[in-house]
Image (cartoon, rainbow, N blue to C red; front, side, top):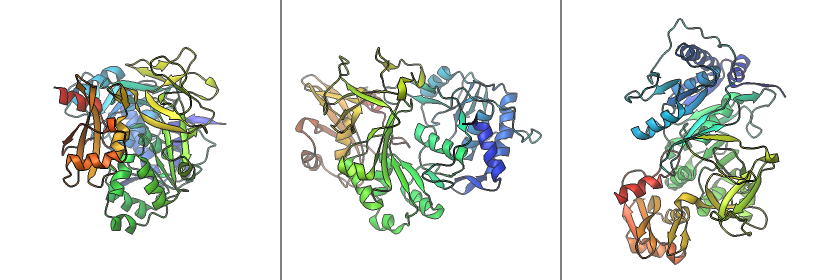
Length: 482
């Protein structure tokens, strides 16, 4: 096995075929050669401003070619890319910057902070060389910002250097094909998909912002082989007029993954019926890369609602979140995993403490259960659990049932304080057409236990989830509690 830096791997792709398109973003594109030259020049500009191996470069740019050039330039400096959403609030951005202490910030043009910065439209001087800087391996592939479920920012530094096995071919499933990256690059899964494309040679097709109609049009136009959708994207595609959805030629798709959030069973089944069980797959795993699960469409039909069994020797246990005791098969508890071979922690938090047992099992805070065959079923985040009269209500399950109603476009379920029950279930909705509370309750009675049915409903016109399908329940609760 021959490992090389990410920067060197991307250079090799350009040397193999400089004219081959590396990235497409709407009406713009970059060939491998163009990406190599632009990223090299940008890397020299970064280095001139103090970016050294092992330092962090915070990237606050939207999806686009500029983001990709900045990320590749960071790796070529041996530094660590730290992509964060340009749509976060000012206090959140400052909080992340103070954790990262970046050598350089790219973007956030109107933000006042104390770190060296370059504007989002920065272009390196034309006399800077477009040849690679001295080769260096970043000690961490990336530094992702997290904290959307709690409101307290943290950084996740993977204990994986930015090295690529140069003998590895393109993705086994789609060698030298086209991969659609529909999500925001500041999230782990889209960033990982893009990285894989850059290293192994697949063409990456980006959307600046997700749009269901545009997504299908791009799949048809570019003959896309592979894509990872979050359930919110699947829901928006499914809500398109049937004539539009069925009128697009998506027969090029060989692999469709869903992940990043629990996928409602009705939605997964609908996509399997549309695209086929050979195409649909579901994955589960955190940004920390402790471990993960995988399920094919065929397996899912035998274990509906599951996210699969653990992969690559990963071990899994379900523990009582309070006592830490192992729970029996079928009982919901906190999901703990251990990497293959018990190799030790795969990540390091900055700004938070990891949840680790004394014997090395780790959790990212998700709840779920195992069946007798070892298939995992997700419930929700531990911090999002609603205790209603001593009984557990899992918001994701209520949201899945709500969004099965044809007039509900999106939903977020939170717990509000109640003197009698401790908490009551409150549903916040975006609807395509008006629908009254009693109609929704009748719909839910066929799908949920009685105590999980929301006591109150609220309609809003603003988006409840970000571009990656994540809902910030802590923020929704805080606004309603004043």
